[in-house]
Length: 485
Image 1 (cartoon, rainbow, N blue to C red):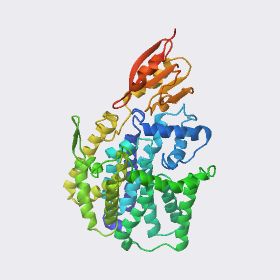
Image 2: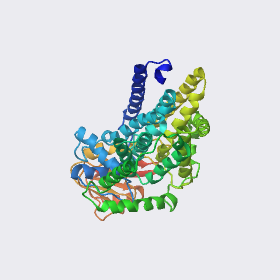
Image 3: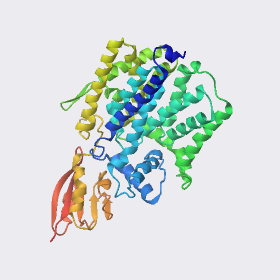
């Protein structure tokens, strides 16, 4: 009799549950990440990356920038939904198509967390997957066209494939582990920290429990797979070999930005912790304490368990410490902490007695769902939302209709700050951008910041209709729409 059957559960039933439960968690995760995906205005960072992706989509050109935009995986993977949805140009692209790539990645991350925590028991794996599926931060940033969610997904994939390779070596598992590591490194330079953090955590927690170590030949295969993925992506699949040189320069640029210099994104060490506890901002309450407490308890319990639980606790602690002491902080970086916290919270919930376990799990899940509803669906661009960081205001959603209402002709943007306007004006090919007002300001549609509005107004000829548009909180533009004479 197998150990599974000896626990009173038939083998086929267990296999059916082990297939159905992660699929249900994936469905929940994707539903939350896909619903009304285009409703939130494009963040400036999303818009910036969308135009870079448009160059790849329309002309097949991608050039890695070591100083900005992070790694290339987001752009190349975004080609798939664009092709499937028949959007072959920047003008044809939609927010939904762009955001599908991180939305799918975030949904697959839920399944990967299930696979990673399954050795700890079905309840633990199911709880961890559900927590990640509905986590406010994970859902919110899985709906962003930025790299962070992809990095989380590839990191979890590296965990899962790496452990399987180490426990039961084989050529296929070696290639899978190397490929996942390569995808991590081709997504963001910060993977250079996350990958060693996994190794350190396993060395301190799980390696003594592993059955046998792989052969040197298979380790070499894994390393080769990692190298091939990095070379393929950073060289733009052979079309821009200088990208390999730039990839080597990227970590130092990332380190300099993260640890020094006035970027405007410096935050105190406790900033990320504040996103998980009670805070009242402008009359609204944001609170994940109901999740943070079991995660903390689970971390303490896991440290006392040799093997995978201890490794997860050590890895989460390492990530938390490094992210906290690094001055450069933006809220989407916090998603790198969320899977570990979900796993640790699940460890704590599993230790409760059966009747109490179900009640506590329901309380935590409902508490997170309420916060996700607030942050993701009711107030996604509200400046009081801690995840809506220097976010575009809904006024920008009016720009496409405004641009369509004026006759053909040049569109001029005269402002020190103007992103994400290039995204909303992508259907107008004759669009130019100036930081200072030129002598000739006339156009079919002219945008000016408040500091230059009077100067622009004095240099316009003909009849224009004026309107005020918000760009971001505290940043206003004046729109001058030319009227028929």
